[in-house]
Image (cartoon, rainbow, N blue to C red; front, side, top):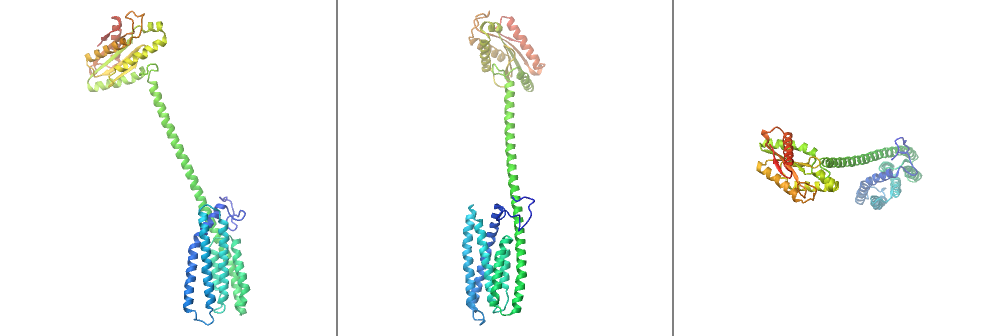
Length: 418
């Protein structure tokens, strides 16, 4: 892009041959866009004039109809050739081929031809009515129809003017008319050059502004895409963080050894089970399960064996859970707490017996136990209708008391508390 402090000299400041490559390309497209309708208009006008001459060729004895027919036909042929050339160049330009220089050269040749052609026709007009309108019109149209640097457009303007001025005396014998024509074309030459220069400056400035707008749009689009990507990345990071926090929450609520909820999770969830039972006016049962003589087992077989024992017991307890309105947790070192709603008293006791028997059936060797040769457990059950009881904490305390009574009574048994 041209710098914002660039000063105009024949339009934006020239770099070598012309303005920046991108702007040269835009100028070429602008000229090609004007060329087609302009060429079509020229051909249509010349064909109408040819038809008119063929019909009225004998209107004036001084009128050299065949010379004019030749000039009009020549204009049609040359315009057609340039039409074909510009069509080929437009295709190549659309394909990304750098043909801007060829387009500029072809445009210069056509404008030169247009102005010189006007000069020749103006010569012929001298024998009829002595004016130079065709030459002046072609000079003006050729100067403003296409966008060319002032130094470049001066080439066809000066060439056509010199040719016209040199040849004019051979067609116009009147000294007075010659002087008048020379004064007029001199003034007109300056005017059309100024108009062409202003036309080019205005067009290049407009194109420059359009290119700046496009660049700004592309920049904004890039920024928007970058921001959208960052937002998506942030959203992804947020989701990953939430997932990590959820995993951390789950991990923090589970017992690392057995994989079942820990006491913290039980303290959070027991209130929900209690409230549910209270709303339904149903029963609320708490099972306190303690592995018998577990410290002795650890001392005898080692802590690694003790960990395996705890995992095996937790697996039995998990299989015994009902799975609805209940929760199992590791409550202490070798203690487990199971809370469930909706069981009647016989169902609660039967579940306690199945848990006790399941642990015994594991057959985990414990030869130093005073109870038997395998690991066993004592279970205390607190049973109540929640609407009639105080709170879940009291139920846990009663289950703990019942468990201690089971131990006192000889262990490896189930005791129902209040």
